[in-house]
Structure formats: C-alpha cells, structure tokens
Amino acid sequence: MASIDSAETGFSTDLPPEIAAEERRAPGSGPWRIALRRLRRNKVALVFGVVFVLLVALSLSAPLYAKHIAHTTPYKNRIADTITVHGQQKNIVDFDGTPIGPTWTKQYFLGADRNGRDVMVRLLYGGRTSLLIGFGASLITLVLATFFGLMAGFFGGWIDAIISRCFDVMWAFPVILLGVALGVSLNLGGITVGPLSLKGGSLWIPTIIIGISYVVYLGRPIRGQVLQLREKEFIEAARAQGLGPWRIMFSELLPNLASTLLVFFPLIVANAVLLEAALSFLGAGVQPPEPSWGVMISEGVDLLTTAPWLTIAPGLMLVLTVLSLNIFGEGVRDALDPRAKIRMEH
Image (cartoon, rainbow, N blue to C red):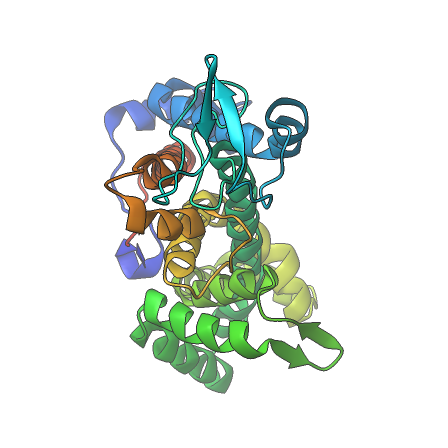
C-alpha cells in the first residue's frame, strides 16, 4: 500500500532547479506557506479537491433532500405503489420485478430499486455511511499507526521486535481477506470487550475492522522515519535537557511527522472507502437495509441488464470519491515535499 525510498524516509537527495529556487526565497516564507503556494498552482489537484467537497456536501444534504424533495426515507418500501410521471400512471415496481427507471423529477429522480425505494435518496444516505466509515476508520488507523510507529522506532529493542513482528503478520494477510474474515464473524455474533458491546450490523464493526487493517501500511513508514529522526541533534539536545521518552516522542518527534501524516490521510480515506464498498458488496461490511454504495452495488448486480442505474449510480459516486481523494492526496504530497516518493499501492 505504501512504499518509501531511502530507508523508508521518503526523501531523495536532489531537487529540481525550479523547486530549489523556490526554497531559496525570502526567509519569511515558511515551509507550510511554500507548500500552500505549490498546492494552489496544482490546478488539477484543486479541481478534484473541490469535487470531493461537493460529494461530501451532497451526502450531508441527504436528510434535507429526502424530507423536502423526495418525501420519503431510505428504508421505505413502496413495492406495490404507483406514481404519476409526466401525466402517466406507472407502477414503481412492475409485476415482473423490474423497478421504475429514472424519472428526472423530484421523486425517483434516479429510479427505484426492487423494493420500491428511491435510489437517489439511498445514494445520498449511502454516501453519508461510506464517508463516515471511511473517515472514522482513517482516524483509527492514524492514531494506532502513529502510536505504535513511534514506540517501535524510538524505543527499539524488544518493543520494536514485537511491534514489527505484529506488523509482519498483518502485512502477510491481504486486506480484503482479513476484512472479510473479521467482518463475517463479527457481524454474526457482535463483539463484547469489557463494557464495550457492539451488536451485529453496527456501523462501528466495519469502521474498526478497516481502521485496524490499514495500521501496518502507515505504521511501518512512521517507524522508518522515527528511526532516522531519533538520531538527529535536536533529539540529543532534548535528552540532554532531561526530557523523558514520552515527552520527546509527542513534543519533539510527533510534530516532525505532521507532513507525513497529512500526506497519508486523504489516501487512507480513499482506500478505506473503497474497502468498505468491497466488504459491503461481499456481505461482510454494512448490512442491509442500511444504505451504502457497496450495498447498493450488491443489490443491483442481479438487475444489471434490466435496471443498470442501480449499479451505475453508486459505482460512479464511488469512483469519483476515490479518484478525487487520490489525486488531491497526490497534490498535497507534491506540495509538502516534491522530493517524496511516498505512494499508495492498492
């Protein structure tokens, strides 16, 4: 998923002439300001960043659309009802099981599914679910990977050995297989850890599974960078001042990892959204009737020839979300450090 050159530090030695000239500018231009200036010049990354913001805004507007425009909910079945479209009375679901196609009006703008539910409403609510799981899982990955990467890289010794071997075990399992195995078992029986209890079908189950599955892909690069940073002069100076290991890790090392974490975060979100869709499609993620893009694609596969909008609509939203996050994430990486070779591998 992530590969880094130069002993996992993500830096090379040579700078292109235009970047070198930019970094020799006035002393008042700090690294973050220079990065922002580079990002503003990357029009493609900005365009896709705006596309992602629009997708998020559309998903967040789902309750308003459902209440004031479609006048329905993502769960309401209307399999036996009829609707008037352009003056004609039509069944929402025909007797042969084929749902009504896109009406391009307020109700059933993108048609209905086999249960008579409004596809547009479920598409927006599915976006809320997929993005919520994606961001939640990414935050879990960020916290756990940063903590264990700092521990392994700074302390070394047996702590590093244990954490690195756990990383190796997780690395050996394909993410999709690990997610399916955990998702099926936990969705069937739920999970109880002390006072924490999650029932099967809870959205927290795929969130936690995806968050843990990606820890190794961020934890290893962080460990490699900490191994380099702990030998720097400012760490030696902190030790000489009597600072303890925990304070050094979180007040000296962590700020120096900020750019790496910022680069990885949108790429992790993209991978988390994609993995959620894959798990939900296979029945190991979000459970019906809760909408998500993966669930909608799974429900529409059987009607692909007669009702293709059931898979095209959520598939297009998924592609746009993942594509916009990846391109914007690449732009952030280039802005923060054009020398970096960090990339996400799927």
